[in-house]
Image 1: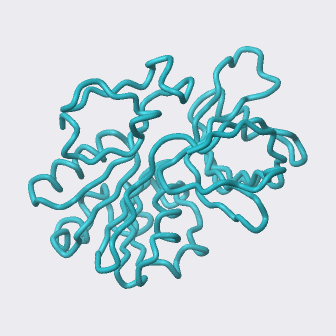
Image 2 (image 1 turned 60 degrees about the horizontal axis):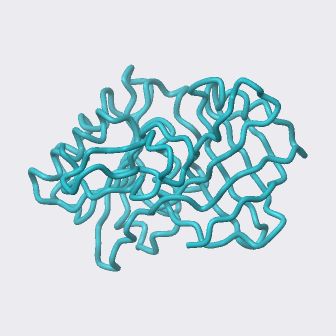
Length: 257
């Protein structure tokens, strides 16, 4: 797939809660096809101490308006600087990068599990997977209700459930403690997940044990996005793979989990 480097126009920068921002970037040219799990590498301007671009998952794409929406969670200096960008500012980005999730078949019943900034590709997948909403279950975990983002726009695309570590929204505990995960897992033909490493490993191992198809989107530290710097290498059953080019989406059976 052709990769493009362009200057986007920052149309909107909205703070969703304490650490999460929604950035809407408009392209001056038609946006090429982008699928859930793929990412864009954004240059952090006016920050001389930050040399490398930062990768962000795509939350949504509007091909009519030529916009890409990003869910930016503040995790360090780069992401914090990006959330300080002003509307009307130009933002350079390379896209689309990486391989996407495998889209489900029409008869699949799927479970999407997101945590942290990994919520973004799960919401995007729920929207474009093409399944009847009754066949799409989305489970989102966070520390507290204040860490969850508003998912109202995505509710027509599936059945949503929540967990929080303090019990302030949904069931108390981790996503792997939720009754959907404990009692209903075998109802699903495919599981997709993105989020903290420990969360995905727990989900992946359970899926392997129950012989359920499962894809995970790894969040290894990245730099170039082209497989040159080798910052993001993952040791898989087929040898070392670059998460930025061979992933970030992997079938859990291919990983040494």
